[in-house]
Length: 243
Ligand SMILES: NC(=O)c1ccc[n+]([C@@H]2O[C@H](COP(=O)([O-])OP(=O)(O)OC[C@H]3O[C@@H](n4cnc5c(N)ncnc54)[C@H](OP(=O)(O)O)[C@@H]3O)[C@@H](O)[C@H]2O)c1
Image (cartoon, rainbow, N blue to C red):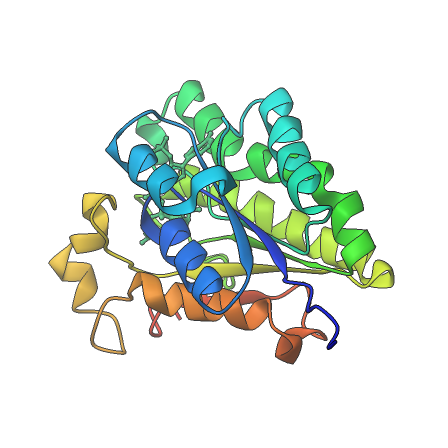
C-alpha cells in the first residue's frame, strides 16, 4: 500500500468574510486541511459553518482564553498545525488629531495584540511542524509613509511589522518562517468604503484595485515550498500603490 499523504493543516483567522475567507477557500482547494474561525453570530458565520463544518470555530481573538481554545481545538482534531494565516485587523480612517485614545487602543488590540496572542498560542505547534506564519500589514509601511487618514491604523500595522521581523529572527533556527502580506486596495462585499475611493483607485499604477484572489495567491506562495527560504519579509500586493 502507498504511504498515506499527510495533509497540511492550516488555521486561517478572520475567515468569515473578506480576504480571510478567500484565502481559506484557496488553500482548501489546493488540498490543505483548513480550519477557519468566526466571531460574530451572523449570516457569514452560518455560511462558514455550512461550508467548513467542524473545522469552523468560534473565537474572539482579543480573548487569550478564546485563542488558546481555538488552537487546542485544531491541534486536538488534527494533531498538528503547519500554517497560521492571521487575517484579523480592524481599520479606522481619519486624522490622528481627531482620534481618541479608545480608537488607538482598538486598532492596536485588533491588529497587533491579536497577532501576538495567536503567535504565542501556535509557536510550539509551528516549531514542531517547521511551519509558516503569515500576518497582515497595509500598503505604505515599507517606506514608513505618513498618511493623513490612516495614522492610527498604520501605527498598529507598523508595530506588527516590527514583531513579524523579530519573530522571523527568533523562529528561523526552528525552521519556521514568519512573513507579512500588505494589501493595497482590496474591495470586497464587506470592505471599508475607503477601498472604493475613486480618487485613490485612479492612482494605482497597475490600473485596477486588487482582488481577494490576488491576496490568496500571495499567501499560498508564502505557504509553499517555493518560499521556504523567505522569512521576515513584507510582501506588497498593491499593484504599485504607495511606492
Ligand atoms: N481589504 C483591504 O483593502 C485591506 C487593505 C490593507 C490591509 N488589509 C488587512 O487585511 C486583513 C483582512 O482584511 P479584510 O478586508 O478581509 O477585513 P474584514 O473584512 O474587516 O474582515 C475581518 C474578519 O476578521 C474578523 N474579526 C475581526 N476582529 C476579530 C476578533 N477580535 N476575533 C475574531 N475575528 C475577528 C471579522 O469578524 P466579524 O464578522 O466578527 O467582524 C471578519 O471576519 C486585515 O488585517 C486588514 O487590516 C485589508
